[in-house]
Amino acid sequence: MSIPGAELTGRAIAAIAGQAQKRVPAADLDERDPDYIRETLPRLWMVASLYFRADVRGLDQIPEEGPVLMVGNHSGGNLTPDTSVLTLAFSTYFGVERRFHQLAHNLVLSMPGLGWLRKYGTVAATPHNAERALDQGAALLVYPGGDYEVHRPSWESGKVDFGGRKGFVRLAKQKGVQIVPVVSVGGQETAFFLSRGEGLAKLLGLDRMFRLKVLPISLSLPWIVNVGDMLGHIPLPAKITVQALPPIDVEDMEVEDAYDLIIERMQRALTALQEERRLPVLG
Image 1 (cartoon, rainbow, N blue to C red):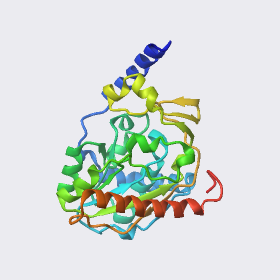
Image 2 (cartoon, helix red, strand yellow):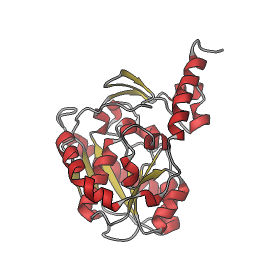
Image 3 (cartoon, rainbow, N blue to C red):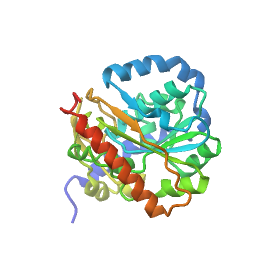
Image 4 (cartoon, one colour):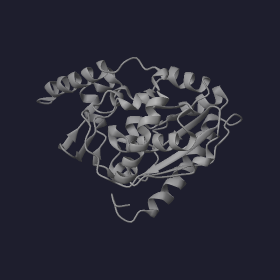
């Protein structure tokens, strides 16, 4: 049984997503530009500090050199302010010469106004890019929850939800690197996220066409009702707090045990950060 308008809606969304994907160049780790970072970092960090009142803690937990896998919970829809805040803080703390890459969905890299992310080291979330970054001695930031977690309802903002994805543990074991868990809070307050829209994404075939398991619905500026977040939105100035936790060596651990340990530590830390907040947006 077909739903009236579903086919037309699906075609329209597929067209937008298709055009967005065409705008994304082949991901290249060498697009990271230390000179560009050095030039733009002061003003971008100032904006993040003023608009999001960025509070980044525990960067001293990250090994000072060599490859390391940073694993975070993800919030804020396709604009992911937590990623931007952490990227700017990392570059400020460790210096622009230290290689740092972040994995993101291709559609995020294609969104208007976010081209600067590639110059800061953001590349498409593929196993090849992850392995290559670690092989080059970089710090690598991954978000196993991906689009599933980043579009969770706002009332689940205090929940770490990777959807059972354990590939990051296997990657760390394969490359012999430590995992540094990173938790953040505030991103899910930059809009009012209502639903992941998993059923809608499946109905429209977006899971098959674009690896999109969700078609989120949120209330956000300037669209009011925002379906898909394909064109982004204006985030509310919620306070973003990020905390890096002590590194974990998973080399001699079973994948399931390592996954459960990391989720447990991250959830405990995220709950503590959530309990610090008195009011949404204001922090």
